[in-house]
Image (cartoon, rainbow, N blue to C red; front, side, top):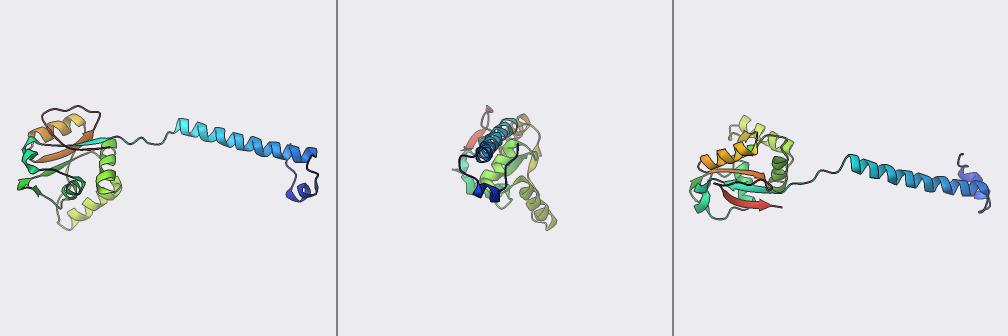
Length: 169
């Protein structure tokens, strides 16, 4: 069945068969659209943001409180010491959800923007990007064994032998 053009509908009585069929088609179209959207959200749910915990080597215990601004300066190479203690940032590999969440929450950047930032900094001789590690285990081991190291992990991971510097929701 088809819907009659608007010019014909305006001349058609309100209770005519053509007008009722047209309304039913519009209603059916809305229902179909809602069903399609529901299926899309079930098959492709929006990404869930994970909480991130910032960890540091035990040597950073005397460094005082570390907040988001200080972390941003550390991970962009603009701060190399905190309270006289040398710090060394450590990243997860690009594409890791914890890295994406950390960069978005702390630096207010995308992962691609962060990579571009470090390409430019290295090209003009203003530093090298943080060391990148593959797994949470490597991150924890590196931070635990390297004085001044600062990294981050998904909050759901349990760790020992490192200092918890900040938890991000």
